[in-house]
Image 1 (spheres, rainbow, N blue to C red):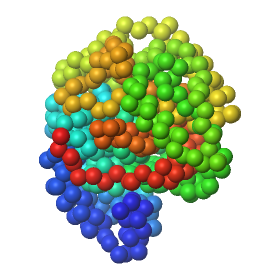
Image 2: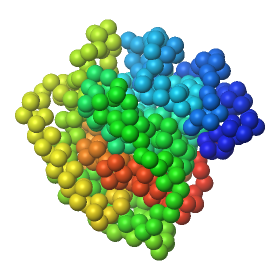
Image 3: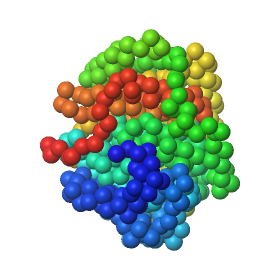
Length: 457
């Protein structure tokens, strides 16, 4: 059942929130031993929640990533120093979702402090890919993606800086949307004006994703960069005829990012199979100078900003990759950050010009299929050595640097049966058009909506 259908039944009084909670918990009992996606459940809190039947989500159970606080519910951030942390206040986005009828039923797994694109941590363990439980589910919103793919929840919240929402959606065969900064709330409480990291919706199909974005969107003065929701809801726009669609496809962002022939073949095959008279596809990518340096500078700023206000009792437990991120941040100069902002403006202006002649830029989400869950990150992709765990995420950099919306759309499978998603990058504040295009492609490809019993590898 889609989130839309479940909400319809709630509004009609044919089912209750308690019915959905029972169904969700029963499904968790079935699949959690194999996937470890929802690491903390809060059924008593969910049953005590009230939601108006005419609210947007109408009492639908949802998942919240374990990087966002939920009052009275263990929130670990995946780090030992917060293993028993129970916050006394909820994140503003959680409050918004609850005000709009969402009922928080559980917290989904994340790598430590959201760092790393493989969802494992020393508190809750590893999340496994339901399409092959030997493989990883990517990260950092890996628990959220798996909770959707396995049918534990109807909607699940994610967040994204370096593909943290897009990569798990890609690896698990579901939809993940990184919105433009300010669309779905703001950034961290301590760096409220920065816009590298954003919250966003994850769902099993495009229209559910649009609905969840509607539940997140809107101005709130608690977020310095937030702004009003559109007059026409995203869900309504996504349903409309998309008209002419102009797609530019690039397999490697002009050689910037490494991709295996396996992934490129699946993506090209999907685009070639569209055969819609209203859709044109050409191979093209604008020039994107200094994209790597710019992204890394923004990420360093985010890590250092968080670290400076985090007690040593927590930071002393950090894994080596996070300590390496902090060392990189300290090695940067003010001149480096100013250059990054200058380079960022160049990339944005280039993309703004690109979108005058194209609706979306299509490219891989990740350059290779999932690896065994024990491997933290690939050391090479398509024969190209990876310097660190950030290198293999280079397809995620563009949307983050330029502040563009980007969506992972399931379009096929590898020969071994693992899902492959196509990344669609849209214009600034272009979520509505991006969802509309994605829904059109989803219908044309006619792939089954993912709902899977975990396959033990």
